Image 1 (cartoon, helix red, strand yellow):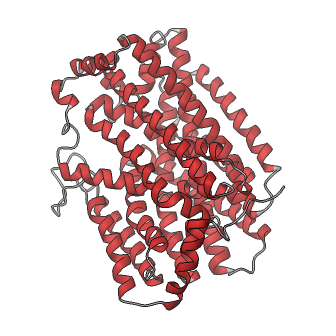
Image 2 (cartoon, helix red, strand yellow):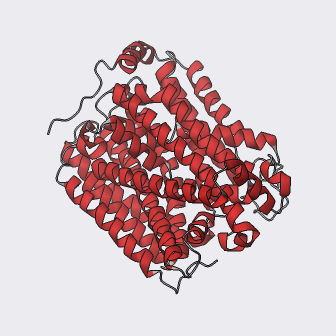
Image 3 (tube, one colour):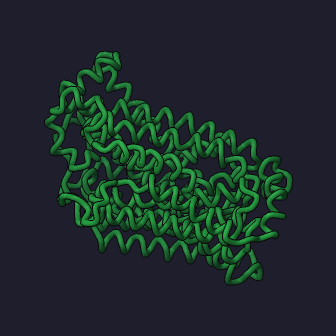
Length: 529
């Protein structure tokens, strides 16, 4: 079992990369000729159908961490890794039942639009933009570092070159093509990822003999942990930490700005519901397949694949593909590895493009247009500022990823993004849509408490401070996931801020927002071209 090193270029993978990049650049050119107004840039003119948006949501949501990380965790820890698959899938039920339709009806382009509908414009937009930028920054840097490590391992390009390529193409999609280009890149990525996962799953089942039970049994037999491999507790020994992880995944998804922003791209609430149903179907099928890939990697690669798969098992799926294709050094093995490398690269490109457009929305639409200029700007000016913001944000993410290099803890960054989303964005957004008395003070307090508490608790977690090899946090904090504490604190901040102040204007506008959110009357319409 072997993977290319930095000095050993995988020319076949580079060729497939070039094809993928050529397709995405053509999409960007096509989209750039159809992107002129703010509605085009932020919401693709609200002309994306429910099916298309469902594929785009799936493409935006199924990151490289999902494809490679979850398969790797299952490869290493069995049942405990499978919990991630369940958590990511169940998370979309929260979005479906609580937010999808209401978000589409109540907002315009961003989370801040929903909050500022009934709260004071400036402080509400600043609070929402702060939460959005915190989530996007942590998630984006994690994806950029992950891209560098992954492409370096799979293709042989240096870490710096890998990050630069990812960043440059990400910025091309957003700056020139806006949400339309980003949407279609995500659709292409979703089709590629589902196709690759389906093919690998079928090949795994054929190799095992077609019986899923045999797959689990063989994986258990190949694991040094034995029966414990199929039981809980191998990775998460603390049940409270497991619950905390689940809360962070389920509620964090409902606060991810780049996911919620997608609901503004469809023409009506019916399409928003349809898009979530399609996304749940695609994401559900995908996570079932990652389960098969994780257990399949253990069953087929055995204990011999652990060293090559890396500390987090992230290369277990590529190694499995190489083995299923005929093994290292064979044409089939090299081709399978190259395809999986290209799919992983497309996966990262699609996710980082969505993150950058949501972050630029917070800067240009929420802060510049909503606070600094306060409605005095033109649509052309807002789009120009958005493009400048995207370039700036992308450049910062590239620089941090390169300077921090592989020393950055990617798992920590992703966990922090979900913790902030669940503890700050989700409580404020949910209460703005459902609680009549909720006001601006409550939103500001809730977001501030959620952001500060989640960041603090992740920093003092035993895996981060003083480090993963230490005996534990110096202050006695034992949980790796802060959700079970920081999420209630976020809701508590919203509640206390609200009950200790009063806003009759927020209460009066609640009924208008509620009617609009539930019926779609007065919601933003699609743009005619």
